[in-house]
Amino acid sequence: MKFSFFKSMKVTFIISTLLICFSLYSINKSGFNYGIEFQGGTEMVLSFNSETKIEKIRSDFYTAGFPNVTIQNYGSETNNEFLLRIPIKNDIKNMQILDYKKNLTNVLDENFSANSYSIKRIDFIGPKVGKELVKNGIYSIIFGSIAILIYVFFRFSFSFAIAAVFALFHDFILTSLLVNILNIEITLTTIAAILTVIGYSVNDTIVIFDRVRENLKILNLPLNQIIETSIVQTLSRTILTVMTVLIVLVPLYFLGGVEIEDFALIMILGVGIGTYSSILYAPYIMYFLNKRRSR
Image (cartoon, rainbow, N blue to C red; front, side, top):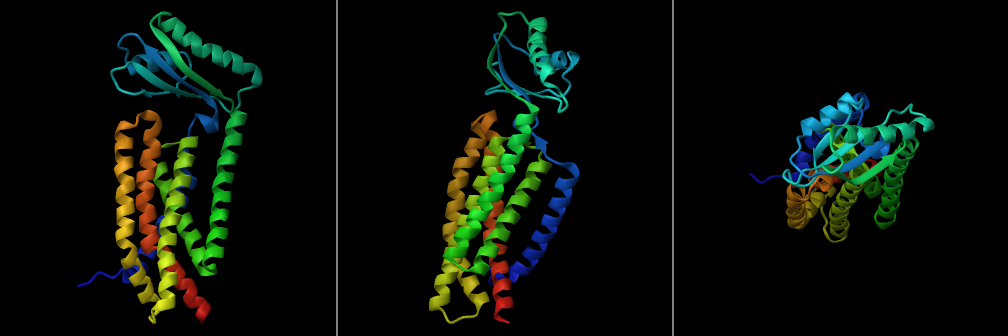
């Protein structure tokens, strides 16, 4: 029995709609795990001359009054380098920031000899700057979505543009849900990964829509059959594109190090979601809108 993409779309549309509703509920209830860039705090890279346990560093900072410190290996586990992220309290006053910075260095001075470690990098972001970055991150996603809507509207038609934006929203929400479930920190890198996923997804959708537009001119068939034919015709290209992207992203996730692994993971998940929506979600919305306009 031959598999029909179009016949599966009604089921996948219902599943996607339920997932979007669940995503909005889950994200609204639990919120995101904002990184230092968005909530304010300190990020530092420490390098030790001899073997040092993460538990020892965490215990020292906890005892000194920094219970929310997160510590992970920076690079390989044998190079004795660690990435520390220490969030700052939102209600901290400007006069207290200098004391806050001083206390951080005091923790190291009191528990480790001066020659046993070095600070390779330290970045401090105040709470006000963090809030500004949150606002700018939201604006970047909104303006990006509007730009895509305008481009697709002028290249195709209204129904195509609305379907593409629905797919964009679908991919953004479901990718955000996975980010939330996996407790991935929302950083500037995370925002960049999500925007890249949106761009990839829209490109995939446009490829199928472009083939639908061409087939509408040369095939005298009902719209549902034209959509089915267009998906089949572009399927090999879609699969090759996905495989090519994953060949790069999978090694990047496992070998790219701490600072790039979240970006690679979000891209891997987002590419899968974007491929699904461009084949089984966006075309159905476009079909539905065209049918309503033709009545």
